Image 1 (tube, rainbow, N blue to C red):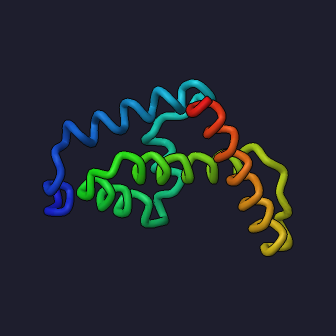
Image 2 (cartoon, rainbow, N blue to C red; image 1 turned 90 degrees about the horizontal axis):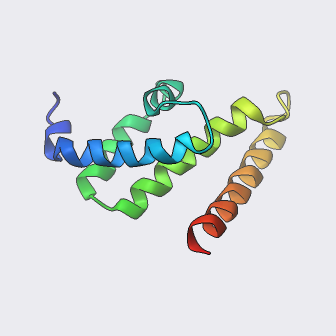
Length: 108
């Protein structure tokens, strides 16, 4: 266990991941481990651990949902694979739409 990981209680991390997995299960057949693996070449896991240290549930949820939205975009959405500017705009639009749908679902 790295020093960074020991700065937050593992039961808090387990609680967050278990609850987020329940939300994923409503939409996809994907484990939280698979989501982390999909982004294994990024700083996702390190940034997630930093958010755990801060213990800000809202930030943690937003962070995890952003990565889930990116995953869904790259796996399920048709996007321009030759023009990165167009693909980036498509990703931004998809994430904004997903955020609005989520807000309606959880806050209405």
